[in-house]
Length: 251
Image 1: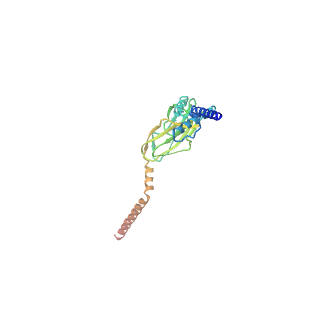
Image 2: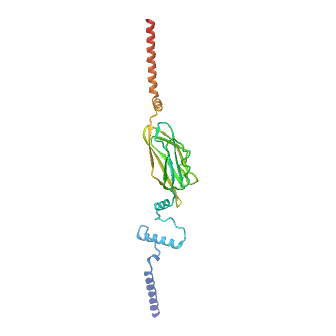
Image 3: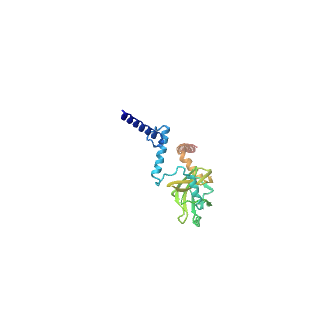
């Protein structure tokens, strides 16, 4: 009997010690299946992130979520050198008459020939370009114009000379019209191409009427009606001449 009582007392003591040990363990050391929608799920996600950092402290980390892209772009631009840009749109154009317009961009120290052999009839406008990147983009747009080019929109700068864009521009209608010259700088930030647009240069152009083009366009658009009027006019003239001839014979 005494042996049984001693054994039972030992068992109770062991059970109590085990319960006490479990009760003082930290909650994060106890394996459990958290509910993904409850607070315990949030704790588990944080716990997993913490473990990943401990296991691979020297692994390549993904881009920081608080990386300031615009701040990095501005920092890069502050390190860039200036350059020069020339643009030669005409002040006066004529409907249906194509004019050639040229733009050139050169880096600092490579602009000595930027005005040489410039195509087009317009007077060139030259200004300092605040920032020049190794790659620049240029576009020319305008309502009531047909604009074509064989020049690539994106070109390299700083190759020892200027980069050149040439457009063939044809006005479609008379009046005061605007041509918009767009310049963009291209930067590579952490493997991504980022484009920064500079202020748009707008040139107001006075487009004159083209009488020959106006007449030919009117005829082309109304040839059916004009043909009918012409047939009627010829018929009336023929009848009038016939009557006069008949009147001459009878007299």
